[in-house]
Length: 275
Image (tube, rainbow, N blue to C red):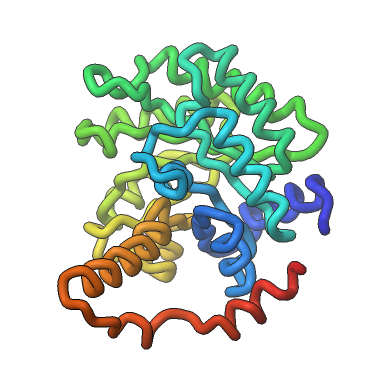
């Protein structure tokens, strides 16, 4: 297995080379190894996928559970892993810094901090506090003995705040505070993506959402996006397949789904390389 430092250096290099790479989101060890087999160069955890894997709604995972998941995914393959650390399980900058420190100890090559509060009545942290949280996270990231890449997320668009000006202002401030990668989940048009990319200098991560019909690696690369992720979508596709099979059995009493899926032989071959 590669060392954490080697993985981290490879992860940073992916962001520094020309072009755009896709960083898919596994939800457990098996899906991480499946994606490694498919040839991807890095992985990213998903808060929704972790929660679903535990039979819970998104946002209902403890920090200890999240860190244990990160460690398991990091140990599953030789690929660098970036973690969705949500709001870093803290409101104050010191708590954010502590989560980044603990996360770095799990084997991660990077992780994120977002400006979402988790409070529906006030979903986004005030601007100054949001920036201080990123600054604290960046300082802790820089203190690691390897290049831990910090992603700073501006969550306006996921919480009904369709304010591109404020979103861009936050990303610019997060960049100045030391973030390595910038991310505004919820962008849904190429024009919105272009506006973000041209407003900052650091690499941009774009989340592919169902409403973004014109998002492809080619179209996003053309406007300067460096990294593309899919969040909890892969886990939802997997659970969707299982739910459709369950409904067929329960409602129709038939088993047509047994003719689909991946064969035991193929999965045994794929996973056998890690035994």
